[in-house]
Amino acid sequence: MGRYPLRPSTESGDDPLTSELHTQPVDLEQAPTPDSHDCVAIFLSLTANPDQTAFERLLHESRDGFAAVAVISVVGEDRLDPREATRLSAAAAQKIKALAAHSGRAEVHLAFHGPYTMALLVGRYLNTLRTVVYEWDGATPGRPRYTPALVLEPGVSGGPITEILLAQYAWGRTRSVPAGLALPG
Image 1 (cartoon, rainbow, N blue to C red):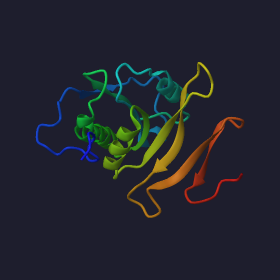
Image 2: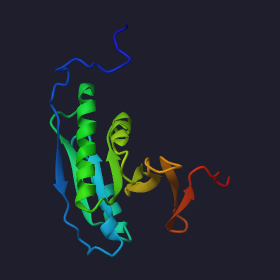
Image 3: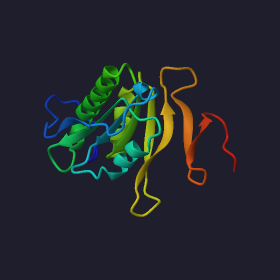
Image 4: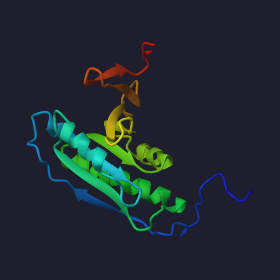
């Protein structure tokens, strides 16, 4: 085997345990609406000192609001050690599930900031939650935002991707396309 093994080590004690996750509830500025009781917004950041501007825009621009909002962030080293990936992804998913459960198994609106591979690892643990996944959109200089990209429902037939969400900036609204349908060219 070469210098870089193709699979993660399973040796006991391989994880250096240098990073931990911290959950910070966010005070809601707007009163919850009847629709908000079914939704929680979560900003998961696996990088040190993330810019929360885009997540704050998501919260302020949401029509229906959220029953609860939280920021889950990494505390520890500036860079994640790859040997921590399994533990941190499982811990992040557990925190997300707990927040959803606290709000009555609410739909999760997830904005992620971190390594792509960690997003995949966290996602595989969220196999019992309806999750709206947001994508970073920096198309407008100085006005970053998170745009809804996908609805994931792994536990239903036709899942796990049940909707593809496309931002329609010209119309100022979001349009959804059922998964599996071709988009107009």
